[in-house]
Image 1 (cartoon, rainbow, N blue to C red):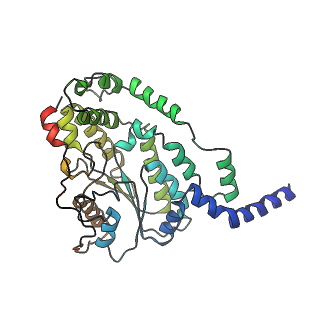
Image 2: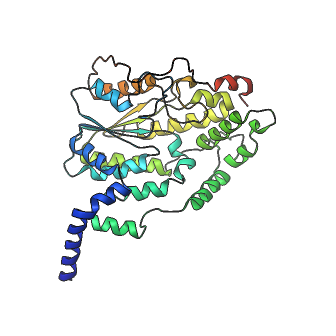
Image 3: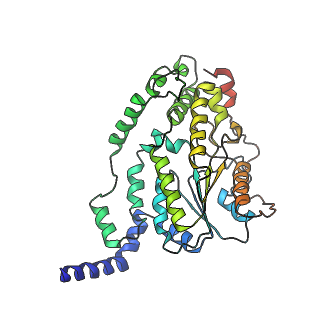
Length: 357
C-alpha cells in the first residue's frame, strides 16, 4: 500500500507539472480566470452573459456591468468571471477555488428567473458545463483527470435531458397557491397557444413559444437553482464573505403584451418567492432589480434574455456599488462607434398588432 501510494503521488506530481495545464486549457479555460479572481480581487463578480452583452449597433458603451462597477469603485479591485449559460449551480462549484483564507471582501452573484426554469435546468449544455466544473476543485489533479476519463459527473446526454424537460412541461402544475391557473401545464398552454393561428407572423409565434417555455413554471424550495443559492449562502457565511445577490430584470413588458396577466402572475410569483427566500439571510444583501425597464432596453427583442443596453448595465452596477461603498462620480467615454443610420428593430411594432392573448 505504501508503494502504491508513493507511485500515485509521483504520478500526480508528474501530471500536475506537465499535463495538467494543457488539460485545463482544453477542458476548463475559465479556471485560471477563477483562480486569479479569488487570488487578487477584493470584489468578485460572478455573472453570465448579462454582464457583457451589448448591442453593437445602438450602444455607445460596450462596458460590462463589472466594468462599470470598477469605475464606480476605483479604490477596490473588481474581478469578474463571466460565461454564457452559467448559473448558480456553477457559481457554487467555482467557490471551491476560493481557498481557506479568502481574499475577497464581497462576492456578487447574479440570478435570473429563466435559469430556475426547466429550459435551463435541463439544458443540453449542462453536460459540458459539468465537465468543465470538474476542474473547480482542490482535489488532486490526477483524480480530477480520472473523473474526467470515467465521465464521473452529470453527463446525461441531450436526449435524456430533453425527455426530462418534456416530462416537466407535461406533468408540473401551473396552479399558484390558492389561485388556479387557466392552463394546468405548460404542455396544455403550448398546445393552445393563441399565437399559433393563421396570419400571425413567425417572429411573434416563436417569441410567444419562447416566453411560455422560459417563464411558465412555479418555484418552490425543491428547485435545483434555489438549492444552489442556499448552498452558496451557507458556504460564504462559513467563510465570512458577504454576498450581494442581484435578481436581474426580466422583460416583463413584452411578457404582458403577449399574454396579459396570465404569464405576469407566474413571473411575479417567482420573483416574490426568490425575494422572500433570500432577503434578510445572514451575510446576504439582496438587490432586487425585477421587474426591470421597458422592452426597448433589451438588446434581444425576440427572445427573453437578460441582455440589456448600456444604461441598464450601468444602473445595475451603480446599485451594486452603493451596497459596497460610496460610488465615485463617473463620466465614461464612448468605446465603440455604432452606425447611427441603423436603428434596432423593436418587437413592440408587431406586438401592438397581435397582443395580448
